[in-house]
Amino acid sequence: MDHDHTNPDYPNTPDGRYFVVRGRLWRRSNPALELAERERLVRELMAARRAVLKAKDDPEARRAARSGVDAAKRALGERGPPWWTDGAPDYNRHMVANTPYTNWFETVSAKDAGMASGELGHEALAAASDALVGDRGAPLDQDQSKDPQAGAGTGGRAKLRGQ
Image (cartoon, rainbow, N blue to C red):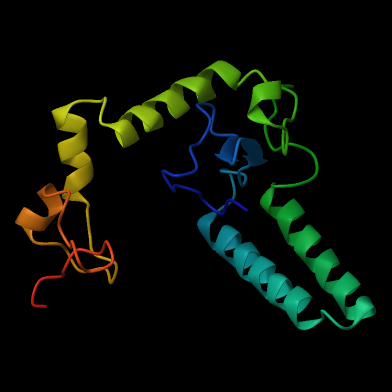
């Protein structure tokens, strides 16, 4: 599920072993894999996932495709024995609240909640607004990115430059 995961919506644990989705830990790919090998394995994984979808009405083909998904995920280090060697336990698929990562995640969640509610201060909000783009990927006009009412009457969407 990871494949060199860097999405800020799914924070990585401080040790780099997991990322979090809806409060659950998911093991990241083995960072020791060479880039070419990782890319090859991700291509295999994506092909196997497409095969699972294609085989929805064929139980035998579906089983084979799922086996391909599992093999690729194991080769990436996302399943099977953990890729780290310090003897730390594997918390893959555990809820964060039931692991030693609880305090870290509460801090990350509180920071995200503060950002959403405006509690983090002007600098953090200014940095976040610098990346603001319209729903079609085009940058918003400066006035629109600062105005919470921007796009009023457009279904909540701000107008894009040139529209």
